[in-house]
Image (cartoon, rainbow, N blue to C red; front, side, top):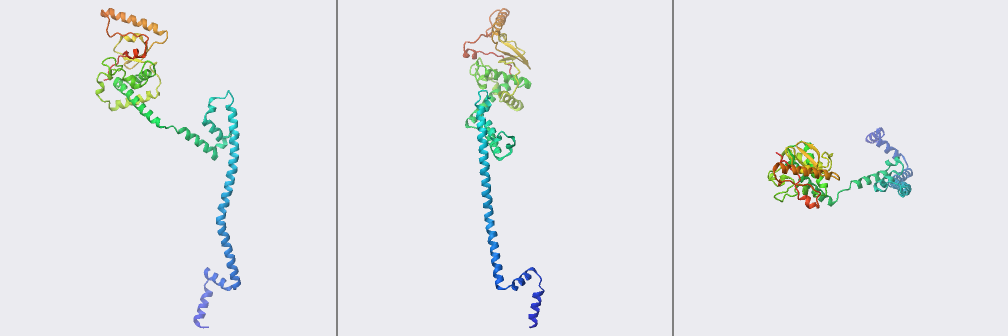
Amino acid sequence: MSLRTRQQSSQFIANTSLRARARRWWLAKSDAEQRSAISRAAMVCACAFGLTFALPTISSANTQKEAEADFREQTLRFAQAKDAGDAVRADPAAPAVMQHEWLRNVEYSLERDPDSATNRYGALERDAAVLAGMKSFEPAHLKRAEEMSTQMKCLAEAVYYEARSESTQGQIAVAEVIMNRVRDHRYPNSACGVVYQGATRTTGCQFTFTCDGAMARTPRGSRWEAAKSIAAHVYLDLDEPRTGGATHYHATYVNPVWNSGLIRTSRIGTHIFYRFPRGAEWASAKAAERARIAMARTEEGGADATIMTIDTPTTTQDLNAQSLNVLSPAP
């Protein structure tokens, strides 16, 4: 053996790396053993490859079977809950709330068992009920919102021009009078209708700012912002009534004849508030009014052309033609 061959053989034996040892192990085997090892390795790879695809399929099939069994069980409980709910609702003494669809959803989702509120079916039913309750917008609502905005603007204008120098309580009281008139069948059924009633006539406007040129000054500034906030507050019926249902008011420094025919309810700021008589109050109010008119005629030596009597109006048109308030322009 040549020196070079001996050196290569020595290096091969001396090489202790994993690759070299695996090579020596493989070369040491016979041809039959090598073929057998290759066959076993191919079989192991085929099995591993098959399991890689088979296990997810098996797992999915098991999950589906569990879900189907769970669904069947859940459906049975839903049917039982529905039967129980129907039995309760069939009772004549059952409260009306039992007919509410949302309550039925809650019935099914809770299944008469509070613990079931945490499962996926209960969560689904609860979410569906909540979303159904939140779904409130319809195209008609947009038109309604625009109408509300217009009405609140009219109310804000009345507050601004009639009472912007008043305290917040006084401004709320003026706005409340307007909304009391809206609710009174003897007046227009909208804030704008009440505020601008008679504004097209040279006399007879219900609120002086609508016919005395005050609106030539455009509302602006912090007082206008406050008036809009107060108008929205009162229009949405968020305030506590403070005028006793008043439909009229006048400044404290005047004493118009017509107030004797009404019932005084309160004084807020520089305004005194009144309402129409009710029932038996009409007789005493009319008597007080006649006495006041007679006194005024005696003092003045004749009938005052501005005196107006308060009788039970024959029609709404008759009443709406009357100017029943004396309002002071806001500074």
